[in-house]
Picture 1 (cartoon, rainbow, N blue to C red):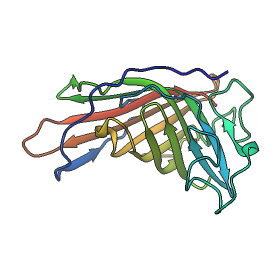
Picture 2 (picture 1 turned 90 degrees about the vertical axis):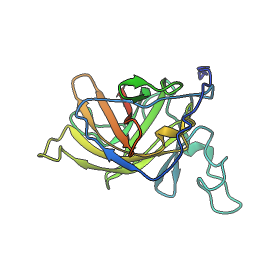
Picture 3 (picture 1 turned 180 degrees about the vertical axis):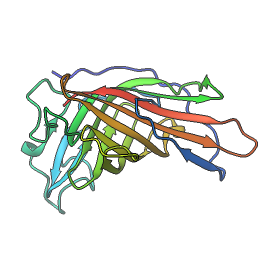
Picture 4 (picture 1 turned 30 degrees about the vertical axis):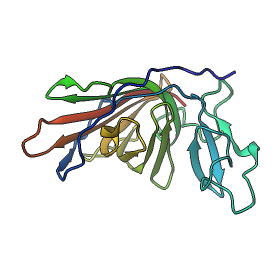
Length: 221
């Protein structure tokens, strides 16, 4: 049985989308964004003709997520990622490979000049998938966030088989401030079979206080 985690809806970011400069920052540890509403915490991993998709309802039930016209994806292709069942075949290598599906509770939060933004903080389920060809997809259904981007092996400063450097854009987040581009890392701890993810983005605009949005989590295959 899947659990629903009710989280009260709070105010959203009302900052206008006037032109400004978003500065991206790379974290070697973990950082976070935030906000949430009560929703189903089950995340489904769907196979659409070889493409991995994540959604918060069974495969083939949302338009544009999968099937050719008039044909739904068979439910057998859906893997509920928050279930206690055995991990999918794309579960990350038990050694030092960041590729595959990672899931866990993530903290989202925003700050302005070091002070928390009202309604920005939440701790909600997150799933992230790193494909071998370098694509990143993900979903955090309780706050509406979807992730899309790319990853590359190692740090920018040098190779490391445990590390994936991430360039990800979040969209659809109910707290609108989180809808932006992030940089960060996913670092595998092979012995613990876990990974630390940290994403961060700065929003700096002339005449306005600096805002920081970040996401951090300890994830497991």
